[in-house]
Image (cartoon, rainbow, N blue to C red; front, side, top):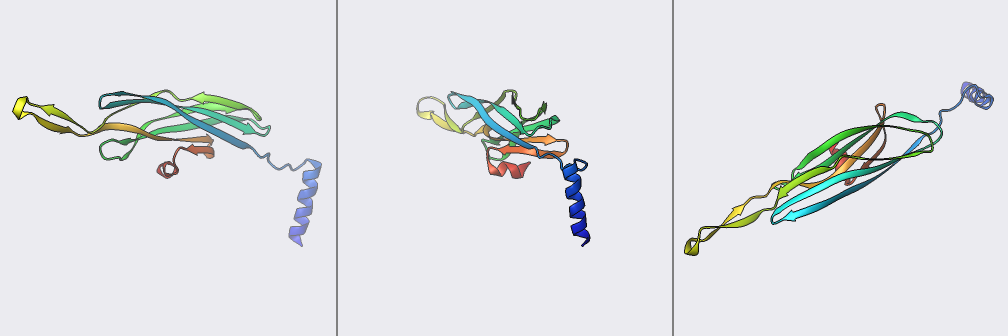
Length: 163
């Protein structure tokens, strides 16, 4: 009986405008990884950045957003996951609006395993050069409103676990 009375009172207050439910805000996040690679014999140089589009449905603004981004690579030698670069972008967003931003360019260098010739004539031999450096693997992006993650995107599901 008490729950029914409280429900009736809450409904009456909501109708009268004295008690309003908080507006539902929905954030949208679209991430595009942009980049190119150049090859010089066995060396590879990759340049990457992220193009981010953030949107907000609803009328209530979100003035204090922080976009945390990370670009990951993996070691060419043992394929261990490494953080290449991470950063924050502070932004505000009005309700019903969209904002576009981009991260700085990140350069990733690596050398493939290869062989080089040593010596001359009959004493000519081949020497193996191990792989070194990193190679681009993916990204993660989280949008925070205070301490709450309101939107996120990961290029690979495994990267969500590594955060």
